Length: 320
Image 1 (tube, rainbow, N blue to C red):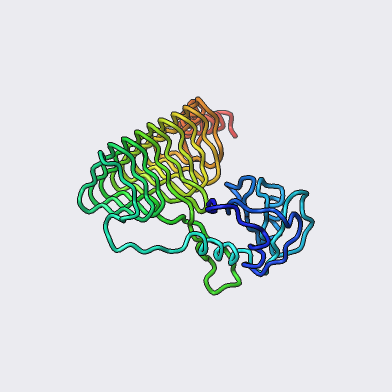
Image 2 (image 1 turned 90 degrees about the horizontal axis):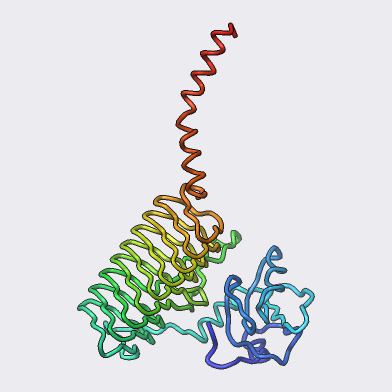
């Protein structure tokens, strides 16, 4: 999430009751989680296991719960509970806004777009020209829909991220991180019925132009689909995944979090992708491997009984 204008660290330290160390005269341009940080961003960390990852990331400013050596040019905001500090910032800059109307008067909708009855459009939503939004579609606050987009019935755009801060010392181990990101759907995208596309935790979930999503597809927070991707029914993509251009995922493919899939890759139906995979190849299986290798492997597995009987027969003939 970008702030409306740069925010001075001195103000933030006072707002959070934090000790400020390092580049104290700087200003933050936004707040982000570790997978999406950019120069000028704030990020928070509350476990020593991830200190170095945050300190060495692109983030310029780190909310942390312990005094550590500050990298040159960066700043630390030291607080007892970094996660609570993150929530406080989000609530301040992206406060809850209710909506008691089906179409928010604060939404911007192209004059040539058509919305069927039963559509809900939240605050600060932008919808371009020549879009067709079918009944019972929900588009939550701050989401952006480009031109020539089709969204079939019952789809939800901009639901909160499935993303939790875990602390087993609390009565409730999992505490939801407030989602202040968006969903951005680029031009000429078609989305099927009953799909769910989660907003970014603090960045954007992006569906690239020309992409086509079948029914019952789920896209997790902060994932980015390239241009002209094709996703068949019941595909599930976890958070912070990057799909290249022209990627095809056939039915019931599952994609693990924080990985990348190269351009023009095809993953065959019911495969499970657990790690990043290369461009211009066909994959199959769980865990997914190159389809040609996987198919040969399956042939040999089927031959195991035959080979076992041959071994047993030779053993009997030799008196073993």
